[in-house]
Length: 87
Image (cartoon, rainbow, N blue to C red; front, side):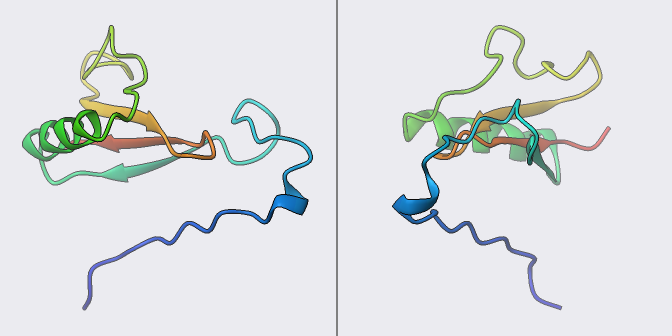
C-alpha cells in the first residue's frame, strides 16, 4: 500500500473576493499524526528554515495541552496545520 498524501490547490482569483479565515465557518484546521516526537521536531526545523511561522511558539511543542506534543503552522491560505506525535 502506498503512502497517503494530500494535494492542495490554490483557488482562482475570481473565488478570492472574501478572504479565507479559519475562524469563519469552513475548514478550521488539518491534523496529521507523526510517527514520533523526533519527526515533529524535524518538521519544526524544516518549517523554520523555510520561514514558516510556528503558531503558538511561546507554548511549543505543548500548545495543545501538556501531553499533546505537536507543531502548528499556517498554510498559504491560512489554514492551520498540525503535526502531532503519539503519546
